[in-house]
Length: 339
Image (cartoon, rainbow, N blue to C red; front, side, top):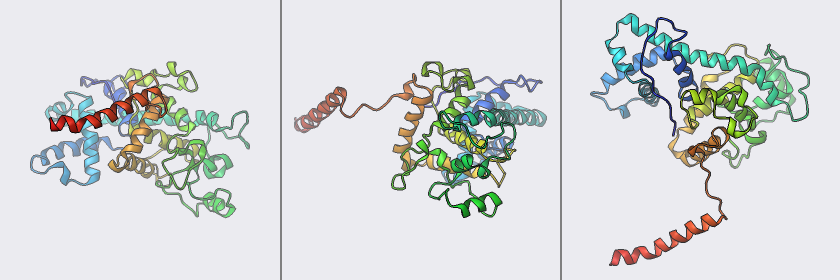
């Protein structure tokens, strides 16, 4: 379960020090990032009025998701709804500006720091990337470079096909956001017969997740030193679905040749990529696989948290005791009913 601190709403005249900015940075990383926050607040308030006559289930899937994010925002900031309803138009505009600034600031900070850091994590162990990639300029990344091109290449296609490479580099072939790249899979390998195997479990994702959720200094450190920085500041003790989607989106952008992160950029198609992951991870039909994935991620980022509880080993003594108790309970149940 995601745990976050609640913040008392105050509106400061200094946007730099206002808690709305700091907390929205965390909210953007862990709950929803590619969002127009002024519209989220306006639509959310209007929808609350509409829901007096119309149940939420009658709204579209996109509206239900937006309202879910709106409710999470209200929950994390007690008094926000009353403040918005009772404030002047000028004050409401200021609150919306602060919330949007916080989320955009988090994304911008992460984009900036990951541009250089990601190069240290994609180089093979004991080797260097050749030809070398610039740390401050991205023009040589994406499909323009053999290494980043391989990591971004959609699963199911052949990166060794020279004709496909040329079309990607020339722009004649465009990769949609819902065509997931190989870097989302553990060891950059996927099984076409079991697409959940290793999905969203690459070491690169873990490095970036640690960098973003805990702190940059936690990457490649001992597990006991990892719960720090952003997570501790905001009381976060477990990973969220939105966090995983955000991490993957940041990796995808860091590897690309695009210099500007924009949710409406049709070249990188980041919004489609982000939403396609959320659509899968929030699908009730995939709950078993998602639960296993969340436990795996909590073991990587929050290894000492109760959310990182691993399943009991199949051949352990504990498992055998549990199975024995289950069998005895099943055998005794008919007798208990007949008596």
